[in-house]
Image 1 (cartoon, rainbow over the protein chains, first blue to last red):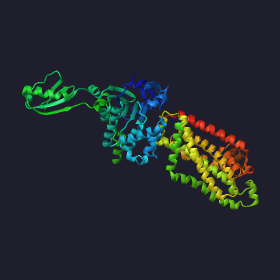
Image 2: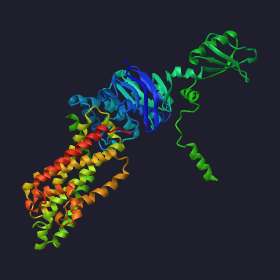
Image 3: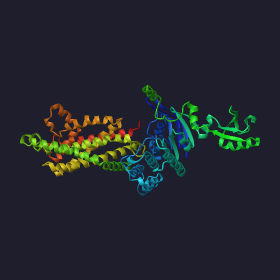
Image 4: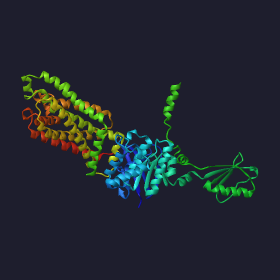
Length: 326
Length: 256
């Protein structure tokens, strides 16, 4: 049985189709990432799967329960960190945890012990009695992560868990996510528009754009859609060198500047073999560089656009500014 | 039961965290009572005026009205405060929880209404210092009337807030509803003295029955307009309907 099973899920807002019939399966114990630009339908999907939005058509099963027919059973088994904050800002970190625990049926010593353990896990124990409104964005995020773990969910939904956070805090939160997976063998459904995040955390990635899944697989599988890794060798006597031939070399070209361009499946593994091969020919290597396709290349390859978040400046604004300058 | 109790806990915690708001809610009715009530009570300090106000002095007439008005204002505001939960996201946390939503919202409404009733009690105790002829024995039944009023309007405010898209409409609704309902309740002047079209409005104003009921217990049967049975019936029905409506709305709530 899968942790999450989605078939032909459609969600419409009036005439607008936010999710256009997606299907996917998430295995138990894996981190599955939805990677896509803002407005691709990631959050809508999360809200449907967490029973907060009603789907228009299709079928979605979470932890073995239909999200439409048995929302209460689904709610018992999931935890969620929303994209936007969902804490009670007037209350303290501890009170937020306590209320969550009580609503989920935890009481007494067991609840208190858990709150302490989790607040220590996200390093907020010393701030437990401070109102949440005094917390930084990163601290609020960490508290939400701790809160989502309190009732030990089978499946955890993380909707853009590090959006708007500084690099250091992001790395920190990634560590928590990895630790959570390892300690509890939890299934994690993650949405993100950060390629590095998907790559760092996810076992499998679905790339989503305009409400459709356009590719799915491990990071390596996805990168292979674009092509192989490319290795560039600069040799001492290029004119004497013909193309290198070996089983692991998928393509070879001599470039105008005398460099040899080689296509290999995995550059990291191929490099040592290449060195031996060239040494056998008795040629000296002067320079080695290699390029691996990134998930951004994959997205570019599939959609013709980059996934990157607009840098707060859309083309329209730029035009306006140019006009104003005149 | 656990979600019910937890929400009462949460509303209480929040309430005491915002002390300035609490002070504001007490000061406002006090201003009415002292600067409005005390001032007019000197004007109306003659036998003819006393007959208009059912034979009691103006402050005694006004006190139950201010009590009901305080509860009405406060309960409406606390009901509408669901919109803050929407704004700051806590609503999502509640909606995704595996607890009965009807129970959750009922807990919230009950917690808010208990707190509002306590504020009503504070106002009531303060009015006892000013008004001459209030009955101490009337406090407890008047508080029960106050609680019914509070939970009814908390429910109404909640339903309204769940429908509202933003905070913008909020001030507008406050202005359009709160002051007219207060004036049309017989809290400040007797319904008898109103022109007939205003009277008609007063009869359909739920606040009228809370003012009337509170006046029955705090002042006496001779100053009331309706029988106390009618007051209880109207308020109970109103509470059941409006709380029921809030429960249904909350059950349906999604996060579009």
